[in-house]
Length: 217
Image 1: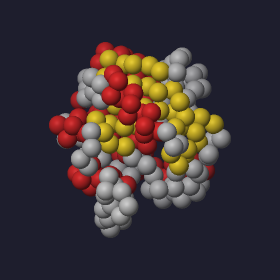
Image 2: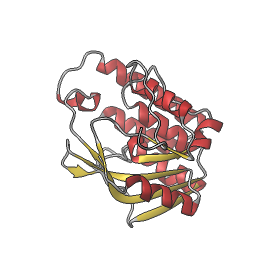
Image 3: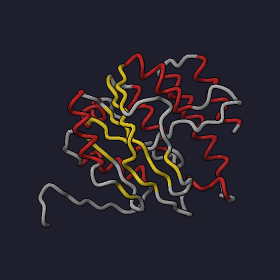
Image 4: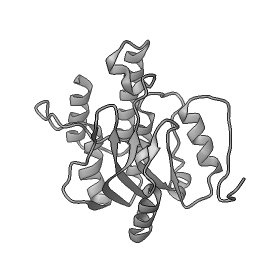
């Protein structure tokens, strides 16, 4: 009510995918970002990301996240504070890092594909009809990010912590610590969708190998 730049919309709770898709349909800005209700964004987050997006005309900007659950930042598998990726680099350097590690001996954590660490050019999402899969409620944002990244021409990596992921004991992301009904089936559905995405982008065999490593974990 105090600032006409903000608009509030409400829909009945139908899961994160439904709410995010509804938000995309209502958005009118140049870029779209997502924030979960129980997390915290750093004050400069969207300002920094938007300014960098405009500077290099990026389709997507990614920042780093600090996880309260893991008590550490997730980081990026590259040196330097900032990194600019063109189409070729997106396919060879970025997408594989989201899928998994190169071998079972590699102990690093794959790049977390959460949408909360990104801003996306709205025209890209609209033009390519990129939406969240309502049938997937586990790592659904990884699927969304992979699809958006595969359709992007320029991506900017901002190696700076700008998002604080708070520990939520009810989240599916904490399912590895306790039994969750149907979790095996949920993971199988996720893997099937990941394979479908990789087929569409004509992924190289090395990327499927990374997926196999993740599946065994």
